[in-house]
Length: 471
Image (cartoon, rainbow, N blue to C red; front, side):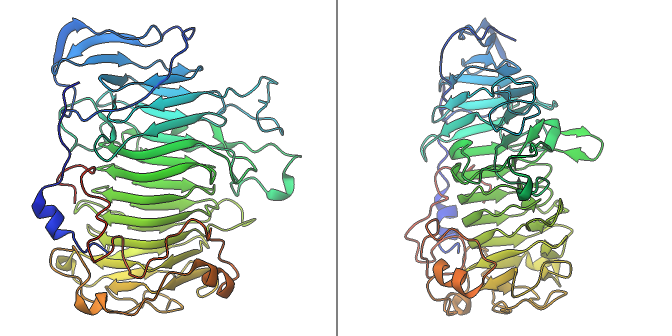
């Protein structure tokens, strides 16, 4: 497979220094790797060499084999670098999206849930048919092991040239057995949990907080969000009842026509997350998500009509959405002049973070908390810097550090923000002070700055693997 470097231009590094239908009988593994030229190019005409369980398509214009994934994957497979893996439509891994019995792992039909692993090598490209609802669904009981590297990230995109489109294919959907507030915890063991899930992907959810849907490391999802029904697009990455043993680190979602990432219940965590140019909300959560995020860099598109955060509880109030976010930089843009919107009694804990807007937008509000859970109890911001009106509709408790300037490149906090006293992030102390906080003390780094990246430039964790030009 031909390669293309993904290194960022040196000017960017300088600017961002301070960023605070086949047989299933063959055993094989799917690993995804590659540094490739973008897009599929025109067909090369020669038939590709593919494993028996994948359909051979014409070699692409870059000389790469193109192998089409089957609609259903019921045995563990490996996607290898050097081959472009093509999705003509929905690809479902496992059968856990069928109706489940009260026993997790046994379907309502009495059949066992398949345990299928889809492995993807570093550098692999997976491409959805442009203009289609092609998407990848990992169902309950199965796993994705997509383990890229900074030099060779795994890239999900459409099959046209380049990586800069939007709404061209579907997206990535992960299911799990973790709690969802449409399934009451009091019913565990007596009532099956079957949540009708995002993107017509079947059923998800359960009662196992530490469920494991696999690993995403150095994974890029770009150009997604196809409108599969009028007014209904799919998120870049949707997580429905995904548990805390799932690992998600070094993830970029770019140019999605709907939300960048959306959490529907569950306890999944994420670290080193980059969300760029998405057209609706960048981070969205619903239905009782109680996971943790750290080192999150959001730069919204000028064309967005969404928020940097849209927070809901929805479902029942058996338990609220109240995730914990630390060391995030949220740069708002587009038609919305409110950064984060907390509604439907959502809670949340945000620490050591920065909210800002494109200065051309004029008057802006950092947080609209009028419909949120109780401020100072279930909705808490500590050591948060706001380059916007920090009062919102309801004054947050504690109050953000108001009206700190952000430099013209949006690259770092200005001097007065850098010197703002934020102390060392101490999640154990926060959990003690705020009884509603459910943050995982073992997950967070003990940082002493606000924002996504240490302003001393010692760890530019986003550099070298994200799509060039997106920051």
